[in-house]
Length: 117
Image (cartoon, rainbow, N blue to C red; front, side, top):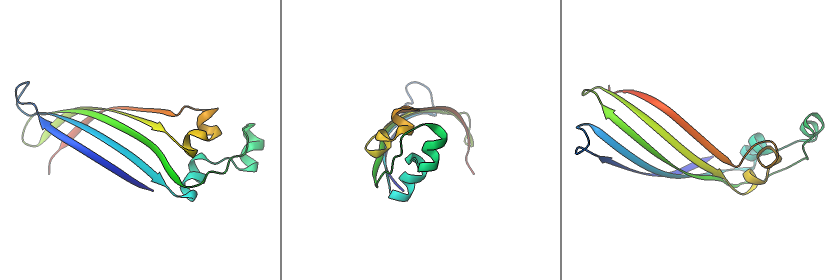
């Protein structure tokens, strides 16, 4: 797999000293082996799950974006929040695992505690 990511960090000192906002966009490409592992449905899988067989090829699996806010509490410590949204596309979206059993919309939220070495 490979991920292409672009990020922009911006200190927002007018809000609070040490407050940083980050915006990110990304996309992931996977080969046929990656797609088969995560999105494929073999004959045995189909019999066990009732989902139709599916053999994906390689390609772009998703595209997404994120926003993050971090507050440095000292020179070493920070705390932050993250929100990431990705949309499965191509064979990843067409897979029965996504289209029938799951969703092509993928969300992630998290709280982060950081320490600078």
